[in-house]
Length: 467
Ligand code: GLN
Image (tube, rainbow, N blue to C red; front, side, top):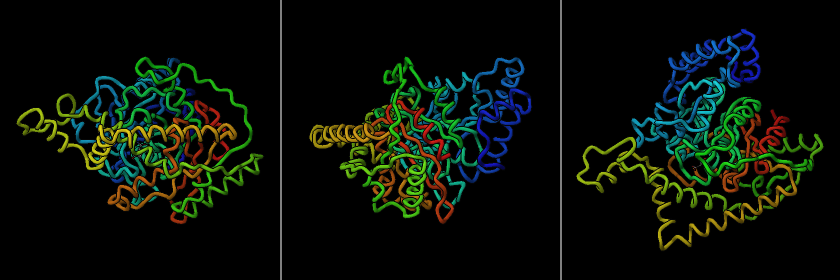
């Protein structure tokens, strides 16, 4: 099996001239799922019959010459995304038995373009985690080495692409959840600018950080999926009308000194990163080192604000409207308490409590207000850097994929793994992770590029030299 399959554009060419059929393509991915999913745990549900039936329909449309722009693109969707009349559980038992009555805008737009959704993918509960070990369905294993984690929270989405079980995955990124597992699994992942893709139908974790984006082996696949899912939507007022950009290239890129000198950075990753820097210089770019005084504030800002937002967003899961309901409650208050106690996992409970604390009357100013102020400072400094340089580059993660269980006992160690990725979410900027070779243990490394707001096109164009 070729694990870096051809890009969709090539598959499409074959489909349109009758060299391949959607049925064959779906069957090929289903075979791959049958061979590996029981071990890797990437898919929670596989829509086998349904995707084959859709393939038959789309093959007919191709024959009639009226197939959509993504005809036969095989997509997997993270369990945080709603798909009408299909289960969505956010990796949690609190949504046991829940089926959405509508589809996320991003999912609906893929369906309208004749993409085929092959299944829903495992993830950390409500997107809270960096290894996929916080899923109530068990961890996802890395196809490069199953003793190691997939990364998270879109771990199932990353491994499904890595192992050839789908062409593209739709993941979500609140603090790195597309880019980090992409880096750990040796694939590409794009976190769009906040406001580019509608969040309608994305089960909310931290609403001012959450984004939906594609994961794939090929940049061209990221680009076509983004083009399909982006843009104005009556259901999400934060999506902007017009994101045309006009940035002239200064042929200057920056890296943050505090990141590349960070003590947690694995030496091989630093080496591989500077090999990329040398490549850029050889291609005529000026690569500058810049200071970033807020490096110590990135994670506290992220974790104060996201837990605050999560504590509010997750209040709706109380046993009344969705999913799990405790069987032995004696009154309403008891129902809330027992339902939430029984069905939320440990990390989700920790974050709800932390978020409730930072929003409480006595501590609101000390934590929540302060973090909002620091968020602004981080944004201002980041934009200052991007006023001088076209892009900010860094490794995506400080290490390659951890061993299973290595970080699970110490949540602070786990949070530290998000250090390089949260800046793009705090600022709302677009960022991409592309593969950067493997370390001595043959585990993949990732190279991250952050761009200007709404300049995904420039970002993808620039990333081509690393593909
Ligand atoms: N690892 C980060 C967290 O646990 C990021 C998660 C995400 O992007 N959904 O919050």
